[in-house]
Every structure is written in C-alpha cells, then in structure tokens.
Length: 315
Image (spheres, rainbow, N blue to C red):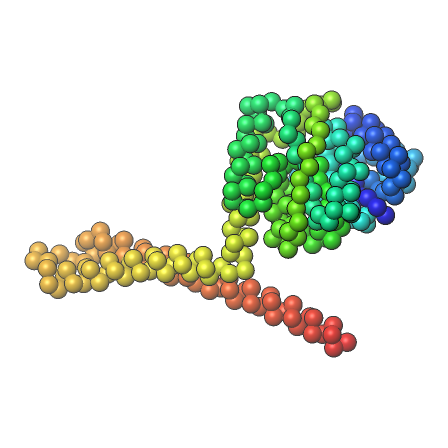
C-alpha cells in the first residue's frame, strides 16, 4: 500500500463526506493505493455514523472510535499502530488542510529520502491574536529548545515513512513535537513544505488558549527527556552536588566562626545559616539519590533488553 491517511477528529461530522471525496479524488488521479483511517476521539455528534457509512461504501475507509475524548496525541498513536502504508499522511478533519498537497509530500518521502516532512502554513486564516501570534512565539521557543529548524511544529499536515511512526510513542500533548520525537529516535532527515491553509468551513475550533500553556510545559518535558533521559545523573547529580557543597561550606563556616570568632556564645541552631546549610545538604542528597536511582533503572532496562536479544539469538 502506498499511502495511509490518518485523520483524528472530534465532532467534525459536517466535513467528513467532503473531505473523503476530496482525498479519494486526489488518490485516484495519482493512481495511489491507499487507506483512510478516521480516529473518532469521543465525538458526541454523528461523526461515527458518517464514518461507518463511508466504510460500507468504500472498504479503504477504516475507523477507530474512542469511548471518550482522550486527545489528539492518543488518537494519532492509535492510528500509527493500525496503519500499513509505506507513507503515512496525517491531516486534520476540518478541511483546513489541503489533500492536493499529498502527491508532493509522498514524493518527498519516497523519492527525496526524507524521513518526515512537516507542513508549514505560511499564510494562515486564523485569528491573529488567538492563534497566529501565540503560534509564532511557540514555534520560536520550540526551534530554540529542540534544535529542529521548522517554522510550524503544530501543522496537522505531515508525511512520514512507516518506520518513523512505528518507532515513536506519541502521548500526552506530544503531537506538537512529533518531529522532535523522530529526531530523538534517530530519524534526522526532517524536511518542511509550504502548504495551503484554508479557512474553517464548518463548526468551530476545538482548541483553546490553554493548548499553548500545555504546549510550553510539554516543550520543557521533551527538552529534558531529549537531553537527560539516558543520563539523569548528569542533571540531578550536578544539582545535588552543588547544593550539598553549598550546605557543607555553610557548615564549615559556622564551625570556624563558633570556635574562633563568635564571642556572643550563640547556639548554632539559633543562626539562620544553620537552617540554610541543613536544607541545602538534605536537598542535595535527595537530588543526588534521584539521579543515582534513575541511572540504576536505565541500566536495569538496558540489561533486560540485552537478555531478551540474547535469548532470541540463542534460539
């Protein structure tokens, strides 16, 4: 199969028939073998009934239905597990992504050697205050933090090699950072293509301003995971060592001061430096132990993987 189109959706019943016809027209005009996989993320309208009707009419249409709304990341993860096409195309169901972009995205993956190609909505038809300006700030922060030089991380229209989607785990709100997840998994050839963006035709957006808050929090998470997931001691151990050393220095200072300088006869516990030293040393020890335990967990998992591989080779 040439292409699998994965479409997560929430209450987009009005647009589904039009989107299906548009995709089918593009696929057939380019002689692609394909499947269309709709992921109903807990819709409360008639979206699922429409998907069932399309599937009965065309066996290339498939669907997965969640019992409740889990989020776009979980919908994409379920879709990635189910697809079988050589190239995976993801797009939104609101008709703002243009299926006419699919042939060129397919060519960039199959013939130009890209592992992942992300769309760039250079000209947008969204609200400047609600989406455009926050999106620019978010993308600038993501580029700076991740090192992936894309202009539009959050564009739903993307293309992937099948091996990419089978080797990344999209969870939480990480759908915005799939290119970063792919890079961390070793897929370094990531491209970008300017794509047409269209004004929403039906309904209203399902994302509020909170998505940018969640996006920045997830950006911190993925930055930390990409830098320290395999070496937590480098982060927690460093902080722990610095804190413990600061507390130790305070303790030495108070001891010298008590023995040779202080003439007032104050108890050490009556001095604020004592509590600063105590807190620093306790926190430093806890941070250091957190890094040490993290290293043990990683080594244990690594040994288990080696053991499993050894068993397979032996058999």
